[in-house]
Structure formats: C-alpha cells, structure tokens
Length: 390
Image 1 (cartoon, rainbow, N blue to C red):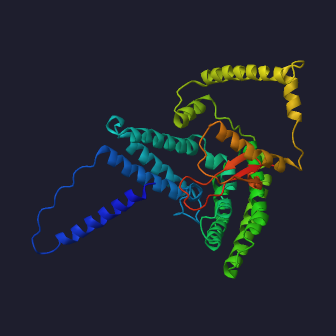
Image 2 (tube, rainbow, N blue to C red):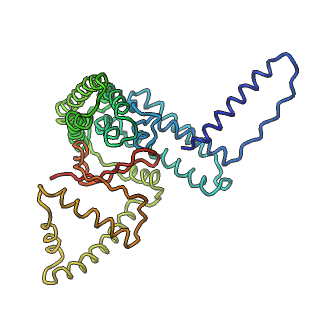
Image 3 (cartoon, helix red, strand yellow):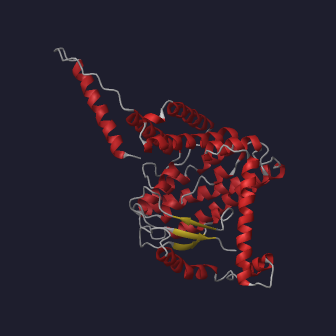
C-alpha cells in the first residue's frame, strides 16, 4: 500500500473541510476554484488504494503475514452478514475497475488493473462458485493461526501476546459461524483434513505457543494468555469433535469442480482461456518430455536397469526419521552457495533460514515449505524452512 498517497488524500480532505467552514462566514469570499479532474492514473491509484485497505481489513491475518500491522489482533469475520457485505464490496469494485480504459493508463497501472480484477474474480469464484464458506470446513480450522505472532519479532513480545489473546478470544465465534454456514453434506477429504488441521492447531497452541512465550515477564499478560489459550484449545477441539461426529459420517459430496466451473476458475484466476482438454494435452506432452529426460539421467546412474527401477533405487536412498532434519541442515548452505556461484538468482540478504519441523496444523497438507517475512515487513527478518517429520 502507498501510505504517502493515503496521507495526501487525508490532507486534501482536511483542506476541503476547512474551506467548507470558511464559506459559512458572513463576509463574502471569492468563488472557489473548480478542482481539476484527476488523470486516469490518479483515479485508478485512488481506487486501488481504497480496495486494498478494504481487502486487508476483511482479512486481517493476511495483512499481518504480509507485514502490515494495522490489523494485528484481529481475525476474519465469518458471520453470514460479513461474508455477504464483503461479496457486495468485491462486486462494487469489480464494476469500478471495468470502467477504466487501459489504453489511457501507464504501463504499470494497466497491468495492475488486470491483477486487481483477477484477484476479485478469484475471491468471487471461491465465495459463489466453489462455496468455500459452505463446503470447506478447513477455512474455519485455519482461522486461529497465531504462529506469525510467535515466529516474527516485529514488536515487543508483550504486544504480540496481547494480539494473540484478542484472536484466541474470538475462536468461539469462528466455530459458531462455521456450524451455521457449513452445508449438511460436505466433501469427505475436506472434513478429514479440517479435523487434522483443527487438532494440529490445538496442539500447537497447547505446547509450541506456551513454550515460545516462556520468557514473558508481564504477569497480567501471562494470565490473560493462559485463559484465552485454554478457551481457544477447547473451541478447536470441540470443532474437530463436531466435524468427526456430525459431518464425517455423512460426508459424501464430491469436491471436484466439474468442467464448466474449472474452466471459469482458470479464466478468472489464471487468465487462461483454454478448454481443460487442451490443457491436459499440453500437460501430457510436457510429462513425456520429463519422462524422457529422466530416462536419460537413469542411464547415467545405472545403464543396466530400466528407468522405473532406477527411480525406486533413488527413492530408497533417504535419511532415517531420526536424522532427517540434521541431514537437510547439512545441505542448505551448500544449496545456497550453488545458487550464488551459478548466479541462478540474487540473494538479497545474509540472513539464513531456520530449519524447523512443520507446525502440527500444517502437516496435513505439506511435506516441506518455505516461510519468509511478508514483503511489507520492516522489522522482522526471520525466515523458516519447514520439514514435516515422517
């Protein structure tokens, strides 16, 4: 976001307000000079700024992860009225963006118009076509994710813990909304994953979070955290149990989008206007090329064996469960140096990623992942390479 642009707009608003007061004075005043119309670029930038502020206000946890801390201590409102209000807001901005003639915008803004339209299309697709709030219980299981407040030192620990307390105190409302919003019949994979995520999050709050803030000095904050944490763990556990007892036994709904929705999804989110059959054809061609490249590599490894057997042989060569993380740790610096020596990509910092086990609530959907500071983060530079233990 452009904070300078925001300050300018605020200053102009104050300026206009002071002029309005001046007009009320009994003494004559000169006719106000008509404000010249804004250029298309200036108009677009104002609309974009307004959209982004509203977007992040509706998704505060996403803002915190991006490194924007105006919304710390808040989580998304899953109440039906809030969902409907955000849907209406997205549609209003979609209409506003359609009015811009990209030929009259500079190159960057012409691209940004399409990016914002795609972002809006993606959100509307998820809400209206995919029905995420009605069909995907994982949305709610992930809502109480306070890890960013633990892993990134962007503020004093007391301040970050206060934000955690505020979020944990909202857990009960999240799951009330979940029970109200979710359809009676859900896709089984969604329910199974949501149960794992909810229980993983509860375990994270019960153990990792407590360990991470062990050095907290303020007794009042410690007491508030102990209470909010206990309530949040209970709410997550109850949600997982509710899914297991009420939703899992009758979870039979298909999760596939179907061809029509999938094609709409590709157009809305990836700007791809190709039929799924054509995309599959392209993918299969690429797969054959990759298989041929692997077959060539397999001959170099062992020319006496067919490629599938070489593949199984390579698969068998791996660390034990006990030394998985230490083995990976040995290779991280050498990989980094290889990237530098071969000038594959510029590495802007000497800060090293910390190797950690994947948090419990992410293990259901991740083998390994990179977690870097948000692009707007100004203070915290901690980065993590997560590996899920077997």
